[in-house]
Image: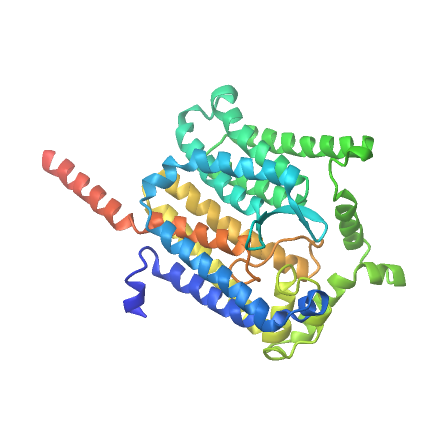
Length: 397
């Protein structure tokens, strides 16, 4: 193990956890796809092979990005942001529709889809981190400091909002956390949060006033999910049918008990749509049990802890902000999946990073880790430079 890790620079704990999760995902995807086979046909081996392709792509991307010098990631932040914005605009007009949502770009010839918001999220977090460093001395000014930060956040979140409210809301919240970490004055931060809420209300109002324009084509779906979550106390036949997904998820968690039903022995996964993605946590608990679920939560917590540890050690503010943003994003996404499966949140489209069946989300999560490891591998060099600088100062004194 140590020999192989010598080729992987950066934080070894992050490498080990990420690679273990990706390897374990091959087992769970093979076990969790009966509902997909029932709906779309195929065999478990077909979906396992498809997921394996994404795992290989994810690892390749992670390895390649982590070899890139950190300075180039900062220099390409603006380009990555505008590329993400362009992909979102392309998806807005020409996106492929999957499960009633036009969030995907279909890649020609290979018949694979890519969710543009997955790239745009990471690009925005990196770009906002760069702007926070650049505008650090101007954060008391609306014109020179706050508005340049608000515009890219607003543009990205609005473009994502059309087909994916949960991702848009989560990204806006992450950006607010990043601005708080970046020492944006609290009153200005509260004002920005208020502006975001008002903007959403205005967009919803415009959709209700002009329904034929289809400003928010999935508005009815969102409201049904919220209403179904609110009406969980209603035990009527209609209510039980409307909440069937959420009820099956909670039942799967209950059946799993402490040690689970065993790999491949879960039954409720055959009645849970997206058991391999949106309801991953429920299926995981059914087959592996509550003890394994606690261990899974611990793994995500350790990932966040290692990124916080790096952010506190590095002297580069840009790297610190990016690492914190990525760590909080990964933990938030996993937490939302767990909260949906346990019935705390309404049903959303957030899956488990590194574990859910592969796609652009898996690849971009790997790219995120690659970015952090690109920074982390240069930490010893930065520490040596700081130590040398302090030695020089002591000699001068």
